Length: 344
Image (cartoon, rainbow, N blue to C red; front, top):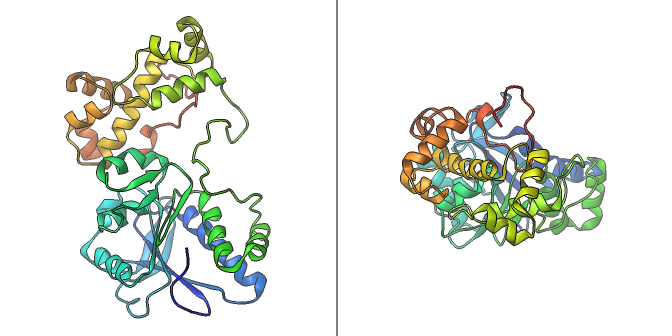
């Protein structure tokens, strides 16, 4: 990855979409701020853009001031980074497509944060590329853009296309850019200054299987069972086959799931298939029959009934009203919910 041109400083345009993730976007910018401060040199410059300019509200309710795409016309940046979160396709206007395609023609490095890769893909700029998005949106991306390889890693540098899953990973993402352009010494200094304790390597998965962030864990037997389930969502395996695969008795697996997950293996397997389905319902235009099949349900009637039981509304209604309200969003794997009154 090399920035284009021979500028004295590297320039970024950050194109933010309504509802973007503010924390992830600022975590991306801060290493560049720190590098400039520590060296006393403007190695990096950045500007926030939106289609119309003015204030743009983030997903947490805060707003930032932006320049409009038309105001930024002129000299192209070295990097153009799209930051978006929910409903990225709703904001891919002709003007946004035109700006991104012009940047691509002029060999600007294009990037995406969180769901930013959806915007680039809708603009036709990721065919044959390898990218990443937030894990909650990976299934939808694969269904919508089969010509683009999507990785479950924290970030991907693929030539002139760079993407990051969002969250705290954007700090690592930016620090790798600092190191690529100005060396390890400045990247280390910037990391220390912003208290980034450890720079994660390329290829680091978004959700490592061997640890939990706060140290709690589930037994390896449960993890291996869950991994087998996650790898077989379209054609579910019988629980007895999973037991044989991981060399544990059905009774023992039931006991482990009841204690560590709070539900039976059968119910957990059904729920992760429904979680996948909900992403496809709310993030794609696939038919309900296609989604039912992709989620391992032979009958659309059975699928709709199970969907409503889990999420409280039918999939067809969820597509119209939903975009996944917060209280119904899929919970990360291996977590045991503790709200009162939950059905087990």
